[in-house]
Length: 123
Image 1 (cartoon, rainbow, N blue to C red):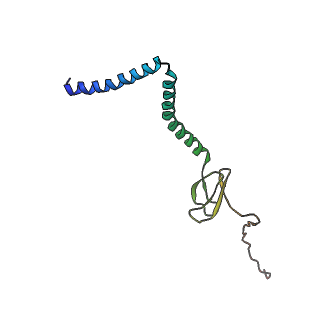
Image 2 (spheres, rainbow, N blue to C red):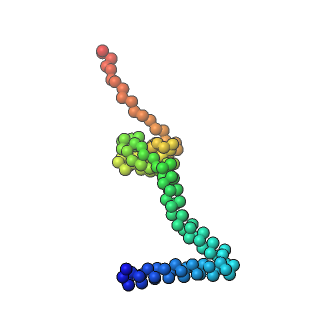
Image 3 (cartoon, helix red, strand yellow):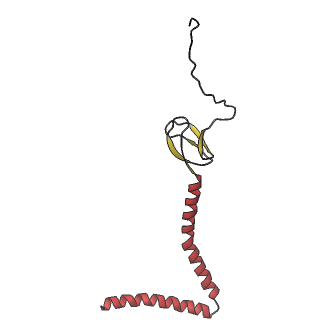
């Protein structure tokens, strides 16, 4: 074991001993509540990002919709209960009940064209 390694390990040990001494001093003075409060705050700061990450993933799984555009058939993703535009045909779409629907303003009548076969009267 070299002298530099020994000095390095003593410097780390000095930090932990200092922390232990301060904690013991605060606990002996009746300030244990302060130490407990600091430990709780540090624990929450470490736990909060993990909870936020998993909460966001859960929310995204329940609100991200992957469907086809009803006009052009292009498949893309959108958030549930939002209004968006198809990136392929620029049609305004509404995402409801995990499906894309055409957005039509109130008073608009949406019709579907049907091809009719022409017959001549002479036949």
